[in-house]
Length: 308
Length: 257
Image 1 (tube, rainbow over the protein chains, first blue to last red):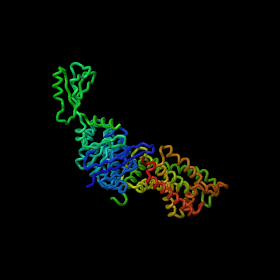
Image 2: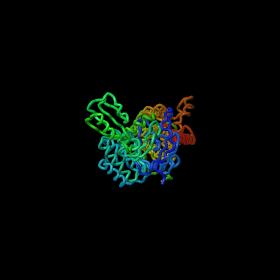
Image 3: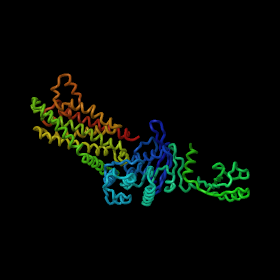
Image 4: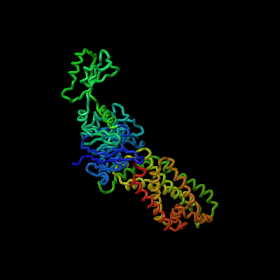
């Protein structure tokens, strides 16, 4: 079976000369959750929009489920569902009306049983006869998801699915995405919430300035780039680091009241026990100790800064 | 369904567009009917009663085809332009653009719905007219043909305006600044033979003259220009719109960045 999505050498420059995408190569495997991370204006939405057909590309090729998006548009597009960033829906239509519209638009024969189940899964069934204008913001977002899923796509794009969404709905969405993945739907989501990628994704791609900076397994990425930090709250603030501690990569924070040691999370010898031992020898007392593992966020910031 | 038409897709749009008409029935249907009734009272009743016959037809009856044409043009343009402009304005067009729907299918659905409405309104006005004056239709088949052709051609034109318009002002500017004057000067209320020269010749450059003339011929067998010219003009205008639309969808002009 071909990969669900293959993008090669995709580029997009606007007439203004702005390069939104610059030679992006990306392959998405069937059944994975892929998170595309990047700051605002990085090219995330442009990438999604080109695959979904709402923005024209300047160069490159895209195949969806083995169908070339340029020559076999119909089959390619039928496989795709898109939940856009903004809520854009005919607000005077009913929930039921709009999902049946979407299903028909994508060339599928009516299937009320499927749509009923879909609306039930999204807690929208009770609201099926309500006009969209009467629904809350969270409900409207669910309607957008229902519309995107109404034609049973194999590949679902979620563009910033939880931007401006409360905590409960965010948890609900994450649960829903996992459920979809279990049903075999491949999911590509863009986000600038690293927490979201960390929570959900199997693989992560980092995009900035229209270039894909890296694509990796989330776990591998965190292993490879992850750092651990040991923070000691000192009894007595320190003006400068003593030479006796030069073997460790240390830093003073908070005006010398905190001693911070960063080390490779995966190394055999972390250097932590020996550091504590040496501190004891030097008579440097501390009242508290804390260790933390860097999040995807730190990794991401590091990457984007390095690229800049 | 890789090959063949996306029938479900066409039907989904067509049905939604028609449902919009039902939702706004007063604006869509009642307004043109009331407007036309007013025209009949003013031009047909008040002024028409003091006018002699035009080409052997009473003035009230004479203006019926012109009035239908007037409404047909404005309604076709406004229905079709709003039909496509509104999704652009609200952003819901993303769904149409991302759907497995070809340009032809989108045009069939949107223009088909707009033209259907126009034909319905045209027929309603025709029926309304019979309450005010006696109407004869000499060539019913040609009458229907002109009705359909004009509705489709000007719905196509409206569709193009809807894609072209970047705001509500632009949406209104062509209908009000170009189409309405052309229709009023297009012989809806008079025969261009009644005009002094050089205005009679100038009128021959007004495309609406050909539409009204052909349509009036199908009623009473008389027209300012030949039927062939009328038919040729309508078909030519339709072809021009189709070519423009083909280019728009090929390039994504004003639709996709």
